[in-house]
Image 1: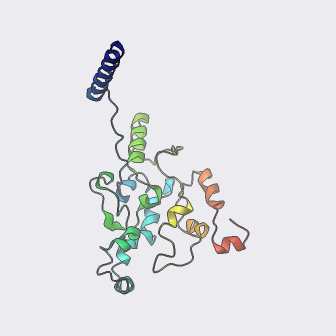
Image 2 (image 1 turned 60 degrees about the vertical axis):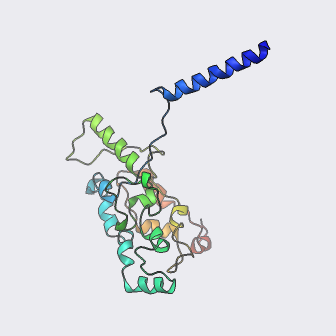
Image 3 (image 1 turned 120 degrees about the vertical axis):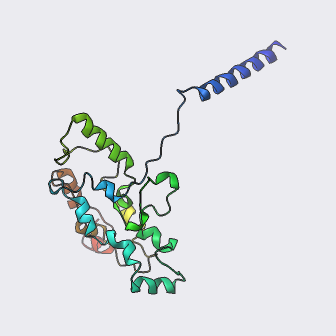
Length: 221
């Protein structure tokens, strides 16, 4: 009988402790989602020539025009063959012609526009955490807003600095009706937008590994 009483008291104390921990202001809260912010926000720090003008280079790429491309005759013809009424609204097309098309609402920051094509975050991942961290670091350092930000080593868990081939082949694969053989090494060099002060990134670009047929024939990856 005494053992039963002890077990009952123990269970009650455990329940009280759990409730207290839940109600306590010190209780752990779920981590906030790292949201998509849009290329316009990236421009704030990535548009100076001194740091490589990544935003300006992106604007000239086909990625930036991916949504517009779906309004063209060629895209409409392909969509019609696939039974898609409007390629600029169909999931089949938009999942690769827009950024964060299928992302849940809690991962989308206010003001984010999905209809701007394949933006920075399609390759580098959600940028809110990165933006907040860099702005906080600049404020703490008392930096000059009229000058490009100093070159820093960005933590790996903050943003994807150098995308892997698997990121690209999510869309650049044979499921695409307009697929063309994809060489990761060649494409990365074509769209390169590095910070000229970052020697490590330059080396990474030079030594990109790719397992496409051409690279295999050339002795790759």
